[in-house]
Length: 81
Image (cartoon, rainbow, N blue to C red; front, side):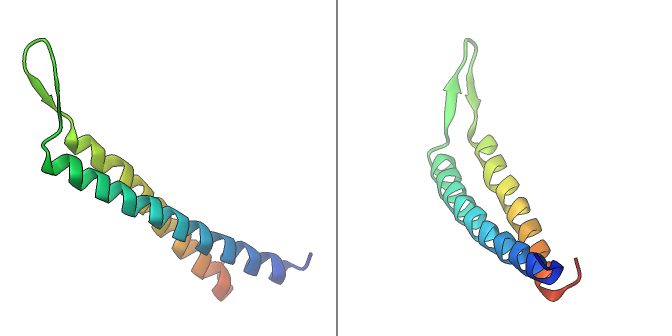
């Protein structure tokens, strides 16, 4: 296939993937906020271990990945990649 067509195709795929990742990010934020509001913790032999801060790692990771694919897709569509 022509290089221009492949570049545009890859740009659109990157943008669609960024939208998909943004939806996962949104659900991760909703879940993390719910767990933070209930002060989620686990019982250990000695005390309670607070685990709700770890719930934020998933939406942060997906948000970074979504931003990367969004920028890469826009650059490909603009012809700069």
